[in-house]
Image 1: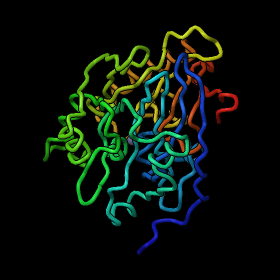
Image 2 (image 1 turned 135 degrees about the vertical axis):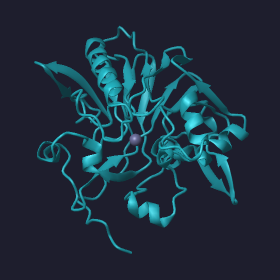
Image 3 (image 1 turned 90 degrees about the horizontal axis):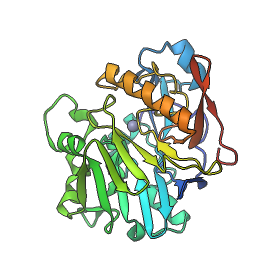
Image 4 (image 1 turned 120 degrees about the horizontal axis):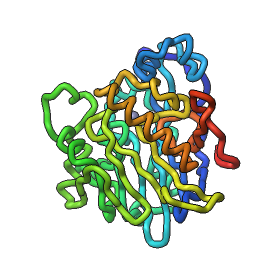
Length: 303
Ligand SMILES: [Zn+2]
């Protein structure tokens, strides 16, 4: 096997980190790490700029987290985004530098939660690095990891995943969705959609046709527990918080710029805690204005 790179540093071990977002207790989970080309992650941003923010490995990739979140309130246990999952042949594990330092299931169990207790799963979009972990292989059969959960995904993203032969096919796999649908556990959403009171998906598009952000208690007036926003791939890391820092993967750059500009400003105004899926080290962070730019404010005790 040809090693694609020597590790820049060992991937950090999983330790659950937690914040309060309004009425929701939010825990950062982990489905390990993977690596994508730094140039693709940074689009038109010059390398001499992005390399200082996310130093590349010798093969020009950057390591990124696969970081689902658990939102708990009363009887509801909601998994927001699930991760890349285990169903990867060795070839693809190598190409994408998959590092299964832990799995979604292991990180949940480390928090004392059994997969059967999960009541809802919410996906921002259906790219394989975001929904692969919803389906596991058991005795040669594909089955939902969360057999008692209602799974929500954007309608157009479900259609993309199930439709073969289109230009965006490389980002989707039908087998990430179909076992959930066969089990009768799949619900499609569109536009602005309330999964539960105080847990609302907003479909934005830009990165993909239906990519959505998930807002938790966005109207919270508790200064100790402001609302939160799960950024998905709209703002993939805490380094991508300037509106023009758009990934080369985004299918509609103009829409991305408009949506990112509007929602970054909204997050600043409402003092929302950002939940970051792909940031290598930070799960949480708040965004503030810094003149014409934005800056990240660390969340105390959360890292
Ligand atoms: Zn992604």
